[in-house]
Amino acid sequence: FDDAQQAPVSEMAECLAVLASKVDHAVLSAGGRVLAPMSDRQIALFRSQHGPQLSTEGAVQAGLAIHAAIEALDQDPTIPEGFRPRARIAIDSGEIISAQGDARELIYGDVIVGARQMARLTPTGELSMTQRAYRRVRGSVESQPLDAGDARGGHLISARRQVARVGASEIHGVSLELIGREGALRDLEGSAEPALSGQGLAALLVAGPAGVGKTRLIT
Image (cartoon, rainbow, N blue to C red; front, top):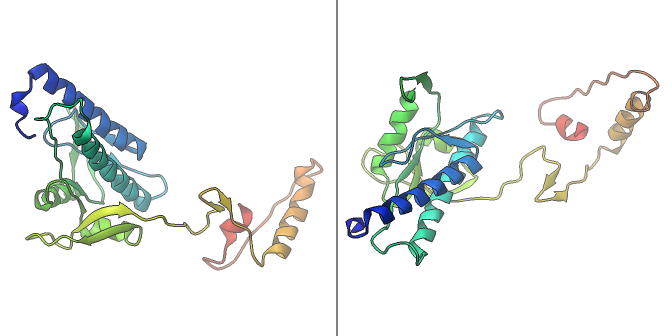
């Protein structure tokens, strides 16, 4: 904070509460959770039932949203001029060990250490990630290498890219039509018709090599 001591304590507390609310909202909206109340260091965890790629993408979304919220506070005329929060946000991906302590949840693991080390190397106001986290989202983010001491392949993230996922039935609300699968689709619909009309049971097997489009066909 820049010269924040010049603002009244009550006003400082209110500004911190606003900032904490922005951080919580950014993390929760991206599918994560904040582990402790606002302090000079904060840890948020992201976990997706669809795998580490989506959870890492959620962390990127939250990090960018937090920086955007801080920039918006800078432009807010109701915020005291001396209150100028800055953040260094770092992302790592991996397994953690969670244990319940007397007063709070305790988190262990190399991923926590990796994120903290990366945060120390990250310029103020930037979002970074380790190389192992970057592997999860490479191609879906705008990035550049982090050239700072022992960054170990770290990357600075500036934006997310719009990516169409394989197997999706629509992109941004626009339906995607099947091409070259009309016959197979008719066979599926015909075989399922007795069950759908209540005339009996039906068991369907859709088989084929990986990537041929089985999931897309049945969805």
